Length: 98
Image (tube, rainbow, N blue to C red):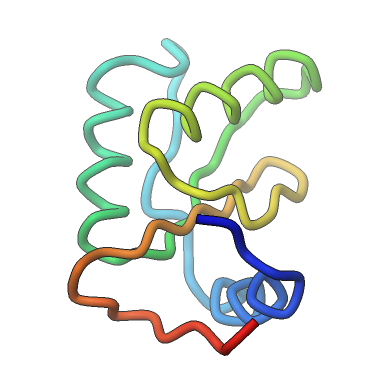
């Protein structure tokens, strides 16, 4: 699923008011953290994940791994916060038309 710029902007607006539901710890991206992200994204569709690292390359690798493993779409990444979207069968978040 690809999102248009209009849809991404809409999701960014929705994500602005939500708090991160998952935060990576000192152990980084573990199976438990991935399972928690998967669970949260299946329940909420739009979530924020906090990635507390200052290394840009490491952060990019973590983001790529999360997107690959969960099948979610990266909406935005600013600072230490990643916004993910994955539409469920229930379609809780109604996207605007392209």
